[in-house]
Image 1 (tube, helix red, strand yellow):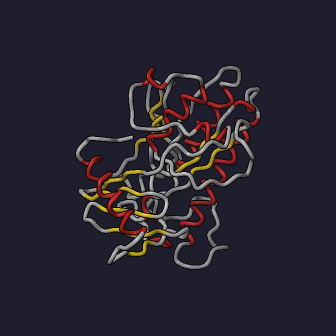
Image 2 (image 1 turned 90 degrees about the horizontal axis):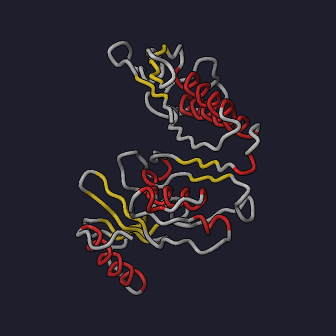
Length: 270
């Protein structure tokens, strides 16, 4: 096992996440200067790790530094192709795309490339389109990409509307790797490996999220907040308040309210 961890220097510059950062690594006795742009330096370390470990199975967890505030144009980047107030944000996304591409090419060079699963996700949302913010419980704040690239997937190119929670990643990776989940402890996640490999139904019918004293339980089309508010959601991530639930909406509110109460009381988490 080894690690490489960036360490920003906030006392030196405001954007110490990107410039004037240092890298602490298990392979070097002293911190290393990350150069002019920490995201590029860290990505190079990750690519080097993948290429160095070509003969042996390995697991890599790579939390990128992009994309995050403060918004800026990466060195050598070009934001002139994007018009509008988010041009710098778009330039950061483009640099992230380049880094992911370099990592994917390094994986493709491995002898075990056909047996390697690549899973791309975001830790939180932030899309203005759906009223998103990383501290909001809206779809824009909690609904994020989840892209899986693996030869074991059934029907390549398939898009699924299955509900997936981050707690599901560990049991899924255990199932793919042939490791019993109990070896890493009991959790609340449910493996969606069979959904990927066999097209089996998604194992989860609802997810739970909480932030700063507020929470929700959601199904595919309904969300019940801890305040008692019920909303319907659409594919664009918009939330439509249901002021006077009736019929299916009333049934959804009663069902989710009971489930929400059970979760908050610790009576069920699966």
